[in-house]
Structure formats: C-alpha cells, structure tokens
Length: 395
Image 1 (cartoon, rainbow, N blue to C red):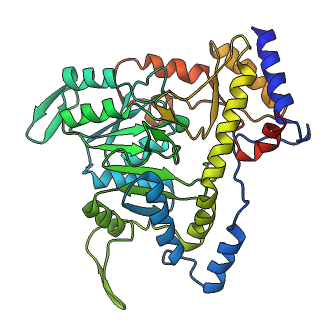
Image 2: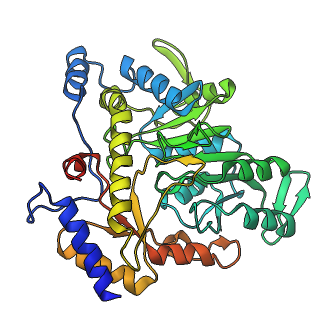
Image 3: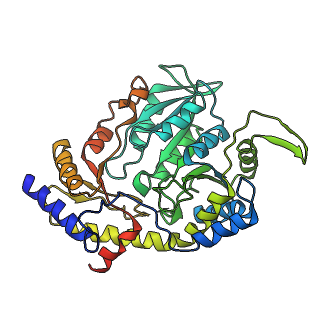
C-alpha cells in the first residue's frame, strides 16, 4: 500500500508543480480573476451603487437563472441564506423534519435548523455520492404514516416537510428517481446545487431540476462573488415571495414603508454582484479547464494501485468543482493526506458526517449510514483550481 500511495503523491506533485515552486502551497481551490472583475467593480464604485440595490444584482440574477434553466433568480448574501429561504419557500416550519444527506457540508443541516426544523440524515449512494433513492423510498414506506398534516415520521411524530438533495462535488444525484419518490409522497424537493453551477443531469442544468434550487458563490466555488448565493426557480409566486422575504419583507414606497412579515436581510450587495457578473462570463472557460484537469487526473492515476479517480456518470456532465480520488480505507486516506500536505499540496478528506459532529450528534438518522461512513473514510479531494491550466497545457 505505502509504495503505491507514495507513487500517487509523487505523480500528483510532479504534475501540479510544472510551473509552481515547491515552497508555494497549492490550495484545494482558489478563485481566478481574469476577466472584467476590475472594470465592473470600478463601475460599481464610481456609480455609488454598492449595496443591495443596483443593476449588477439584477443582471446576476437573470444570467445565473439562465445557466440553471429557470426563469427567476434571487441573489443572497451566501449559500446558506439562500437555502434557508428556499426551505421556508416550500413550507418548512418549526418542529418539521427535512431529510438531507449525512454526507454534505454542514450548511445544509444548519439551514434546516434555522427554520426551527430538524434534519433527518439519510445515506448516500456509493457511486453518485448523492441521496440513495432506494433507501429513501424504503424509509418513507416503512417508517412514515399519512396524516392530515402530511407525511409524518412515526417515531418522532414530526411532519416530513421537504427533502434536500445535494450534488456532491458537482456530481449530480439521481434526480429522476428522487423526484419521483418525492412526488409520490407529496414532499417538496429543495435542490442544493451549491457546488454544481454548470453541471448537467441528463442534459438538464443543475439548479433547475426541482421546484427550487440553490447556488453558492463562496470564495472556493467555481465562480465567486466573494460570498454569496442564489435561489433559482420557475415558480413566479415563490420567486416574488422569496425576494420579498430576503429583502426584510419591506412594503410601501419611498419614505413611507412598513414590514408585513418577519423578513431577512439576505440581499446580495451590488458590489458582490458586479464581481459575480464578471465571473459568470468566465464560467464556460472555467468549467472547460476543470474538466480538462479531471481528465488529466484520471490519466494520472489510472495505473496506480489503491487509487481511483472519481468520474462523472455517463448520464451526467459534472463541473468537477472539486476533483476527488478514492482509496481503500481510512489508514490509506490518512497516509495520502500526510504525504501530500507535507509537500504543501493542500489535499483534504471529505467532510465528517454531519451526525458525527458535536452540533448534531443526537440527531435523527435513517439506518446506520454505512455507505456515507465508508465514503467519508475513503474520499480525498485534490487541488482543483482552474488556474492549474499551466500543468494541463504541458500534459
């Protein structure tokens, strides 16, 4: 094992450091500013429109919605605020349950908690890393009952308010099966496409596959607004409601205004949106580079024992937000991480399962999460920035 892992790390280092000094840390993912970022930011500053009202906010909403294949977009200050609002939009209330993956970033569970609801953690598929439709269906059939208030979890007595589906690392989950199950049980689906802007499921863009989707523009995402998110939907009524809620639920005009609900100050500033508009222009180029990088990695590791590159499914087109490899066990994973980080290649393990964190250790779970646990112990993310094009060009 140690020989093959050492060879794998050496191969990764030789590939990445074609034009990067050995003393320079190589981040897992870093933003790239190569387009009109300075121009649009200067225009924003010159105009004085830097806060939550401005033309760049409208432009970013419109153009990102088009990428997601939806009619409407609502820009927010970050991805978790977009997810929080989206969950409210589909009717999530205090004491409800929202089903979500155990294998995802903790923001998914936190947004559920912000609603006063509780996350119920479900297992993942071994291939897509998304929610396992078969286990989900079995749970809904065997552990839930129909009630006047909706489908209810028998053990806790709580209503199942929604299902949050996550496209892990930009790889689409099996949406047709998940949506079919959700429709059968009349449960809305919130598509957490935070990592999947530009990914496609069966030629349909992620972020627009369910009633409401969510995108993240965090600094480590494929494109960034510094910090930001967006809600995407084809539902005009929902779009209007969520724009209202994320703008402090303000009513009236001019100096005479009121607030008709408890709203949220979640609107994205124009300054961030200006950065995002420039980044969005580069999205096709960034995705093409990231897909080329993924191909290089696939070739790099194809003959290395104990290491396999994570590839998209034949029905999907991934943005490869984070490239990943799989190794046999946690000991091998930790050895790879130790060697690579010693060489200043800032690889990282997958997330801890959310129900294993201190914040959610007493949470509800579907079965023993065996697949998610194995994935958490055997997945490794490797440097995935689009600026690694120099190394690609030499291979």
